Image (cartoon, rainbow, N blue to C red; front, side, top):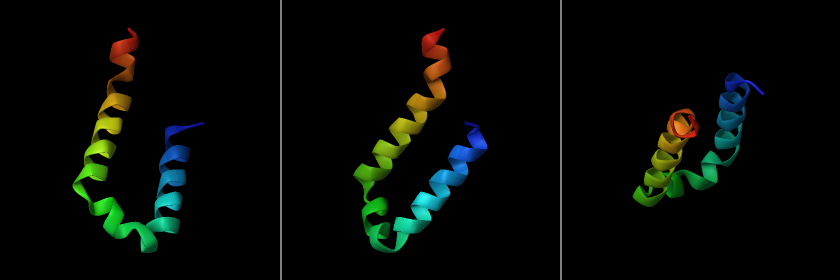
Length: 49
């Protein structure tokens, strides 16, 4: 699975749930968790080496 696939998949998922979840996604805790996940994902190659 390519990176593009995952980006598109994520956009589709977010768009599908956006109307119900906008307030939820804007809460600091969720944003922080998302940021941490992104950071971990970005640094995985470095860690595994």
